[in-house]
Amino acid sequence: MSEAICAICTPYGSGAISIIRCSGDDCINLVNKCFKGSNLNNALANTIHYGHIFDNDELIDEVMVAVFRAPKSFTTEDSIEINCHGGVYVTNRVLRTLLKNGFRLAEPGEFSKRAFLNGRIDLVQAESIMDMVSAKNKLALGIANNGLNKNTSLMIKNLKQEVLDILVDIEVNIDYPEYTDIPEIEYKSLDERIDKVILKMKKILEKSSGGKMIREGIKTVIVGKPNVGKSSLLNALLDEEKAIVSDIEGTTRDYIEGFLNIGGITLNLIDTAGIRESIDEVERIGVERSLSKLNEADLVLVLLDNSRKLTDLDLEILNKTENKKRIVIMNKTDLSSENDYKADIYMSINNNEGIDKLEDKILEILNLNEFNVNDSNYLSNVRHISLLEKALESLNEAKNAVKLMIEVDMISIDIKNALDSLGEIVGESNTELVIDRLFQRFCLGK
Image (cartoon, rainbow, N blue to C red; front, top):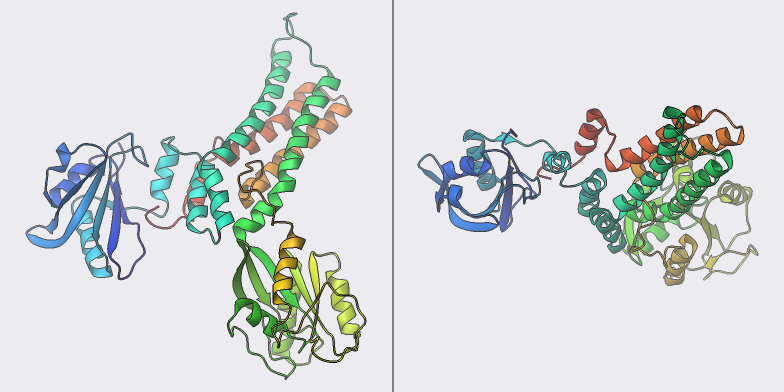
């Protein structure tokens, strides 16, 4: 028996329509108690019915009620979706009426959790639902659809099957050594089979960095010494006055963030405080935060001043970013040049020259302009990537054990660990605690 739950699944506020989702045993009958129209208990599956919601004798709202019967619903339980008029008050009155008639308010993610626990979706699909809701661009939406359409799950399950086949052959040799018709495990063959799976995992992880950046956005940090044009660049890229621009050095004392879509890719732009030594405590903290953001960056835009020779501070910034994926920009090309450093992009932000070239260079250096969202052989979710890395680590340990010709029953432990990590991606070996934490991140009504 599943408890009947309900929740508002559309955003609060004034709007044309609000939707309240209901699911669980006796769900249809409980809605029918406060619904006046056709008898919902006799309603066919996948039908919609016009009527009114009443709280005892008080008319609350004119509604349309969609009926879904188990197992052909999102949760695989009897479900109802009430389409009422939008607006905070009327929607809450309908919700309160349902709660008075025997429903419990659903927890965040509880509908998706029930769909997972009832076998309607796996864990990858569940997470893809939230990825779809939070998608910031077209490519991120395509990645979410990949997960929702089971392409990602199928890739993981194929890997899991290969690892399982290796484990089964090892276990058979351990448990039934007396059977002569069972081929004996050879270390060379075992090494080759493990190596084959390791190679596949490495290729997936190589592709996955692009998927992760597209899904979450590329952390792009703008750095340079004070008064070089960082805030002007942020404003020019965003096409709005996000940051204060001034000739006074140290105007930006903390980092400022904004979001920009380029070629279907979202950049999380961060304008940092000018990096320099300062006796001002507030500015010093801002510089420290800038350096912290620099360490986290996927892409760094380094700004230099064309009208001045490189200073020790410029050289320090170039040195700090040389191992990062970066674009060096020579700004203020409208002024006479005092700088012979070879930059990647030359521009005059004040004259709005070079912005288009910078956007093209960003796509080029990220190597995402040819990213094929329909290629399902990659991961984008951080949890999935970390678990695949964990599985790869276990297989590498197994491979090393094979080279040392350690007993196969010891090797099987590493193989099992890899299998468990892969299973955890799709939710086949999760503890209840992990599942609860995952679904708590969902929004209410999902």
